[in-house]
Length: 48
Length: 230
Length: 243
Image (cartoon, rainbow over all chains, first blue to last red; front, side, top):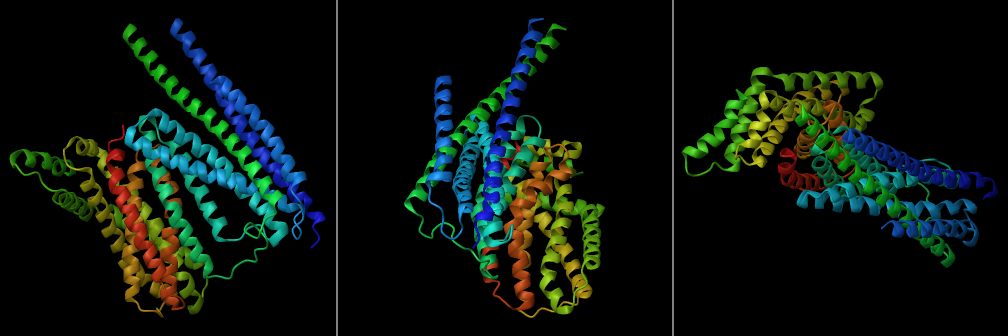
């Protein structure tokens, strides 16, 4: 079996795995930012 | 708590790097499949972690039905979300491996199909959480979580029987065909690294879920206070 | 009129020392649902017409010979019934939302399980009527003739209909609490029902073609029915009272 030509599949799979993990990380990060902003807004509005 | 989180983060990053080296360089080349077989070192640990997370979701859902604690609901949400993310990885890396080895992207094989059905069930769980409104979400979601998990063995039995009646696709190699010791090491290191990554994700999402709940309550309190001032 | 028959239960309880059993309340709720349906025929009519449309549209999609149709008819029949069932299930609980009947039921001391049993049996009867009317249509449209023993089809039909209806009634109670509730029901019902659907389709096909034994599939359906009937009865109370 000619296996040398198949390495593209290997790299593609690894890229996909990391892309999904990074994507999930960014959804977490953006939610954290949103929560922080909302908490700040709530605090400032309650002080008024 | 924060220092523990940072420590865990550092260990996870190191382990992910080490697992990558193990999978790419240290584990020997598979004789018949060549380097493509290395996909397996990410595929199998992801699958195990995903199944484990769905089990955690089931336990948290049952706990919520019995005890009604916010923490159980937050854990159920976090584990389902991270589980779907890992399950997506399994479903994408599987076909990428199958294409050069079997010559086809997808086959309606028992394990593939069960994983797909599992993925569908937990995506529907997340949809329900997204579309339901207000304080009843946790109960409805917990009920669906329990239903979904009880469905898993039935799905597996049904699909295995369904497939054994039909011509089997040619399955070469795969697990169970006597893995080399160093190959097992690569699997185990990556399993450890991915589990820790999942713990970090679930931990973060869990805190965020609790924070979201607290914010909602604070908003309601603020609205009430405003009402009273008027 | 539905409100009055539900609120009767606590009134009776206060006058008579012995509380009515789960079954008698279920029976009364079922009678009320059947009478309502008999007068309006909302669920049955929409279900029947919808199933008819699906059958006609399917027959445009395929042009099968008698041998082929025997192999695909099981799948077509059950998919048509599944879609039609969703139409009926969506109306199960929305009917109780009008005039806050569901809230009245929640406040009453009647056990929630009896409400669930009544609704499930009601849907079972509606879908059963649909099947009785649909099967002759299928036989005519697809020139069907069963090779295996036809009475097995009856057993499969009962088990399969219960499988669809018990989960469907439960999930309909879940989905009425969501935004866009009509869309939500199939989204959560179909993934869970995949093994049941696989079992009913394959059991029907094996009986029609006579190639394989349907016994495994019948057993699987029975297990599915048992597991999900139990868990629905256990979980219906928290879901009904979810606030």
